Length: 186
Image (cartoon, rainbow, N blue to C red; front, side, top):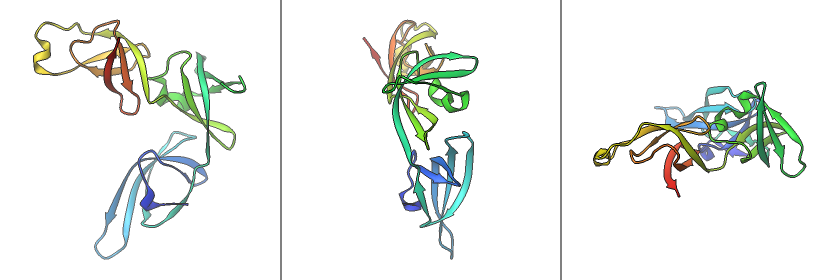
């Protein structure tokens, strides 16, 4: 059982019969009453975000999610196809199930598929990905003095803030949890 004192961002619990991920939480102590925990939960099946408040000390079942390595194959008619790397079975996922991971996943990338009661519910991309810059403003001599950043579009369509010296064709290492540029890969 997971208590409200064990809440952490990213922890997965079972709430109202569905697996949910804790997006945000806040412990609040009221004047005379007991403490409350205000949370934002993302339903992993529907993608809906729920705001709910619980009494401190309430307990929840852990979401019994099974992780499997899956390889992204292709997109067709709004469905995204993955292959289970153990059984070689092709699994179609909808836009809702793949939406967050889509901006960091290119063809043939191996991702973690999350299953709840034998059904795929969502995809987690690798923690770090290497993607090529396809569009960005050119850097000019002297730009680096300010230490600022500029937007760059990578091959999957995601937009990342990068230093001024990055140009089209550079391969970047990106943290998928925050969407931040880490380094240029040689």
